[in-house]
Image 1: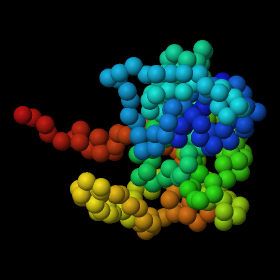
Image 2: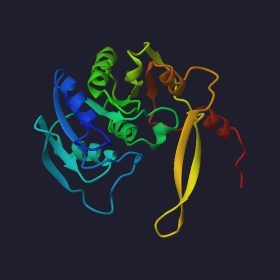
Image 3: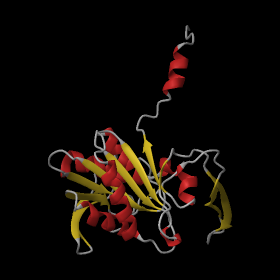
Image 4: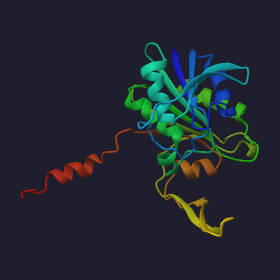
Length: 249
C-alpha cells in the first residue's frame, strides 16, 4: 500500500514521527509536509509564487520532503510531482490539538485530507487533544488500531479521528458522531503592544451546549471520536427547494 503522510504542525513535529512508525507497518510511506507550522492555515493554496521543496532527514529516523507552503500545497505537490504512481491512502497528522467542531474549517490537517478527497484519494485526519504533556506515541497506537478497522477507506472519503486527553487515562471507547457546529465560547482580549497600539488576542473557552452527542462533547467526555466528513459543501435539500422557485426576470 502506498501511503502519503502530511500534517500542519511541520515536518519535524513529534505527532508526524509517531504515526509514521505505525504506518510503515502497513505500507510504503512518503512524507511531504510543511517546513514549519501551518496551524489554522485551513485550505490555503499557494499560487502567486513557486514552492520551495527540499528533501530532509527527520530526526535521524526517516527522510521526507519539506515544503515551504500549506498542507494543501503539500498534498497537491506530492500527488502531481513528488510521488510516482497512485497513492492508496492519505494520512494527515497527528495534529497537536483536537480538530473538532467548527475548528474543522480552520484546520490545515483536515484541509490536507480534503485535498486528498478532491484528488480521489482515501483520506484520514488524525488529531490529539492538546494538553501540557502530549503522548503522541500512545495516540499513534490508538489511531493505527482505528485505521485498520476503517480499512479499506473509499476513494474520496474523509474520516476525522480525534483522540482525547490521555493524561486522564485510557479513552472510554470510540464514538462515531457528527461534527458539532455549535462552536466554542470565544472572545478577544485587548491589550497594548510595545508601540502603544491596541491589539486583540483571540481566546477560547468551552464548547457550547449540544443537544445530542457530537465530536466536541464526546471528546471532552474522554471518548475517541470518528466523524465522516464530506468534501461537497452543497446543501442538496435546500438546492432542491430553490429549484422550485420562479426565477423569471
